Length: 625
Image 1 (cartoon, helix red, strand yellow):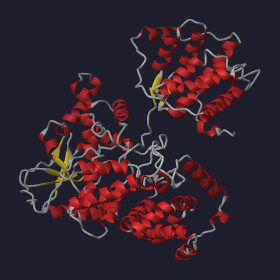
Image 2 (spheres, one colour):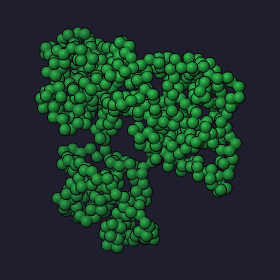
Image 3 (cartoon, rainbow, N blue to C red):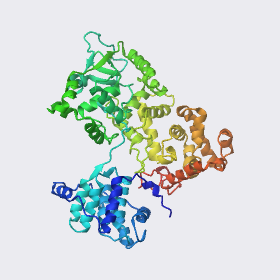
């Protein structure tokens, strides 16, 4: 079996190179441990080895072989006399099989590392190979790293010399493990910090007089217990506040503290005293996040990075609450800025319709506003818009009066489990963290409404019924239908299949044909993955192409039923149906990767079609039983 070592590729630091050199010098009798005092201090600390939640980690024979092959390659670099030659292969192999006894990747990798000092796996270079493999596995399978590699290397020697026990060895390792810092281009999801407010046209939305309005606010006004913060709202049409990166949030806070220019926040006030942010939601939310140390705590479904974001900001800038309370002279200037500096405010006048016009005008001058966004704003009172917002709010830490048990169920159908290539999770609607995710939900619901202009309750019931049909009755593999060779979400296929599902639900004979010919139908889609992309390009836009893609699915099913594809080829004569003959080497590689991507998906024991890989207990599609 050929093993691709490139999956472990990473930059080797100078400290790591020194550690391997030290271990080699120790073998030659020239190196003595230099971190005795630091190691003794660690052992004196009241540091407990973490307890991991019990669960079974899976490992296959193929994965064990991959580990063995990679370790053998490493040994070629670290062995001076017998490169790559095993001394106890069976014992070494068994150490990897013990993965099933651990509850967390980090726990397994550390215990594996320790155990490799008890096994004479290779004839030479075992300590260096063990350390290198340990660092590689940490890099590949966890978001942790070793802060001081030479310290770990010294503890290896002390353990082998029986100066420290196994528990002490583990304690030193755990003490030196740090969570890997994310890249600052990671997006911050701050959507939950300012609630949205639904405004109906029937309500009194005429704003109050301009007199006595404040012209600015300061940071203390943004503390959660302050009245100004509690009055802040976002109109339902406002963009989701999840587009700024950590770097941009950090820069905004520093700009404020450096007394730099921050553009005015544009607000509007309704007759009940609610203050709506028309422009500047990301700016004010970034300051709110820092003031309240809240970078996503209430947003568990969509944000698993809030703790490391908080640690990063506190390290780079400082914690707002601690700075306020501190008497340290180093914070004197920052405290003066917090006390004195303010952000300018401008007010929009007029009723709610005027506010919507202002929002569109402001955003057309700055960040490009998409046609979907414009449509959502202009139609924010329609059931399609209200339902889209209500569904998405479940994942963005928001509350809406249109939310209920059904909208939560719809959110889960669209986005849970969340996208994870490592866990092989591929949600129906792609990643919740994508730009303008509201557009996907809105357009899907618009397709499902199918021009009927249903009321809100009827619309949500229809959406629920169709998604239930797709996921529970058909048990489609979302990975097959909606994800391509690069693992990216295929919006064109998603919209087209939503339309196709309506055809199936409207025509029982078509559904029967789909069940009967499913294997042939799905294998054709996999073998001709680029066809739908070609159709969408012809139409130039995914939401304009959904009818054509839906018709393609329908005609493809007929072709599979008749075992005759001439009509399909005639209808879509702009598609290259013999593209395999003309693929470049790069395109052939992409196709091979896609075939590997699809290869592990289980199949229905009845029809042979693909089945949802997340439901491993399913042996057959419900519609086939």
